[in-house]
Image: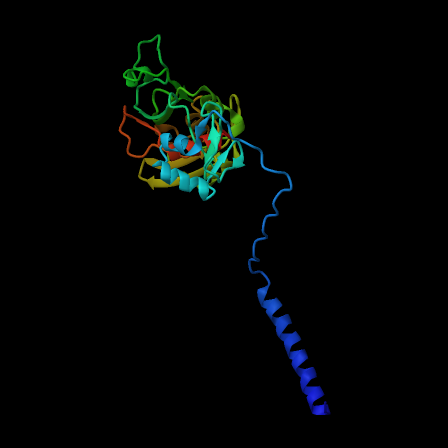
Length: 291
């Protein structure tokens, strides 16, 4: 090889190296391809119950479509049983004990359990019986055969979304402070504008007679001469806590409507009416409390 060829070869090598370095520099900050998961050496746990019901039938009965549609869900890897991904169609399960998730959402298999959304009207107390003879939630669900529990409360002067269920475990978890279920309210307050310092006080925390409390967020929706409409979110559920917090900043609440509990929205549900939660809504709610 002559000197010119050797020089050209050396320059080509240098050019390729420079190009590689440049390419690496341009690639910095870009999302790298995800690493493939390494299969566990431990074999998956067997969730098959010999005298159980076929998984696709259980899913169909739970409202996931025809059996063929449910078979496709299984084959495509959307279904877990007791924490184990199931992709074979021969698996049978015990609906009374199996914990089934579809796309990460818990499936309620017990058809005797029901959860309702109720739009509690103003003036109705969140109890099943009132010694003072005031209208109660029980009167709004008197046509239901199930023995229902209300989850949380709304005082008589407040209105909006209240959940009722005969699922004791779900009710307990939704009420437990461990799960920090957010609640959204639309409130009307009077007493002057909501200054930034007031928002800061409410989100940093105000001192109440039973300890400090704070809002997760405060959003001004509308301001008029003598009133302000706001949307507030908080996780706590102490008695009349929203009203007491606004009293603490000298902006008394004249109307309070709860519009959301976790993933469940009040929507256009009319006062005094109820609706059964849909499969996806209920799955999201159960997942939020680790069911």
